[in-house]
Length: 142
Image 1 (cartoon, rainbow, N blue to C red):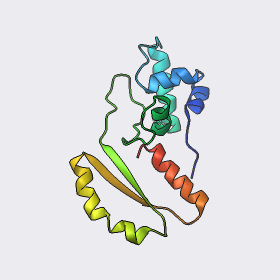
Image 2 (image 1 turned 30 degrees about the vertical axis):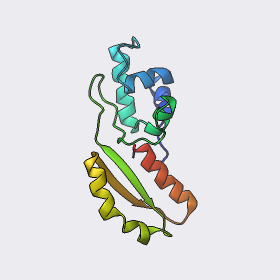
Image 3 (image 1 turned 90 degrees about the horizontal axis):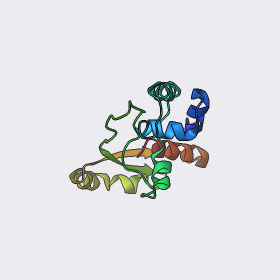
């Protein structure tokens, strides 16, 4: 699995600071007095590198719940809506799959009433590979 693209990576490639990248990808370019040219360059580089907002890190830095429940959007032009429907992740290890699978039919309708969708992944028994799968899920904003 390839490593995740960070704000630092985008900043270096675009020739700007991490703060500038953060403001641009969060739609705050105008309030941060960042020129439209710079905003366009940052967004283009972010898209080219495959940058996705790490909602776990963002929520921690904002003092919100550490576990995000909305999918991470790709960077958009300033002012576009970033609100997406919620997701809840269920991670199954080889040891608990059978027991946990029996809970899904009852869990999905409850989540649906709160406008959440369920995504289920299984993780391999190799701890490093399992950690990468869970990290990818978190980076996706689940």
